[in-house]
Length: 475
Image (cartoon, rainbow, N blue to C red):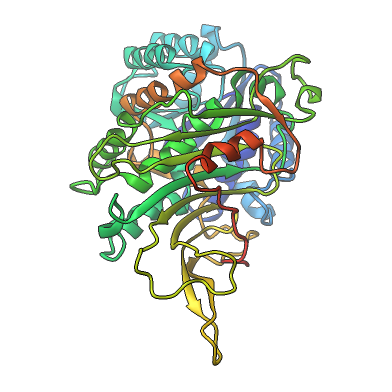
């Protein structure tokens, strides 16, 4: 791999501690980082070389659901030698002069873990010292969601980015696009000839997309109370899940072709302003850094349709929220029950449909729920799962963390699993009308499945929310 400089603005931020630094450790352990690269951390606070090493050590030993494996001393020492630190104010040109002396020219990745309001200061100063130009190597920019807070601000931010960088330099990061199972959906659908012919209105009854968490907002109150569930995960993660599950086959496996098909789905989603429910878990207003009269939602459920012939009149139900009964994220393709089905589901409570499930977390899998006969003299049916499981120890990091995967893609210059400007804007165009009709959320009990109004949303159509199963792919 070619040597490069990774410049991290906001190295002391929560997102860098939680995702980026652990991913860099994993890459070092796997030999994916060049020996002669430089990782520059930038923040306001003063830090000596020892302070930086202590900070990195402490970060890697924090309790982290995404990074549970052993930290090896020899790997840590090799990683530390790649790091250096610059303190200063984002607005101060002197900081960028010091940065230029530190990294020189060559291949550079800028990773921004700062507030979007500060982007212009960063870009202006990089331009003034000539560090945004691809003179003797490539220059790439990684920025985190959210890209704007509505369609107008997203367009303004995209225009700002293009004042300093070209589109092929900009890597808009949604870490869900780096998840193994989400990427595997494309392989499952388009490398096999079994299921793709029946992913259409003739065979599908409806689609459910669920992202449930059994925990609250934690220390994120200051951020979360400004955005809410729909903007936090609904405008990005869940719409991307829907796009992967329903997009047409691209003409080739390339960034342009794959992204074009995702955008077609996003642009054809219907915003049904009378089919959306907002909820807030009981006790949310007592969380740290949350306004005592907050009307921010911690749960939403909605119904939508895709305006195309393939999925005509197929309802899509999406829900996400915090402090719920289980933690699970999945896409469920619920198939129609044939009118002439020979067997009924004896002794299993109901005549269950076949369901294709893409489980993104926790027990990552692709499974197909079918009915089978129990051994014995009687015809007794029960639902079972045909399943593809990773069966990887969570303390092992054989499966790359999404940030590791996306950082490697950025180094390679592959934007396939990043969002481009048109894609971001299509997502906001769908969400904005729903935000406009948002009222005070209904309060739901922590540990429940959410507000009863969300159940009514789907039950009015003679359907019900599927309860995520933990019975498949258990490690």
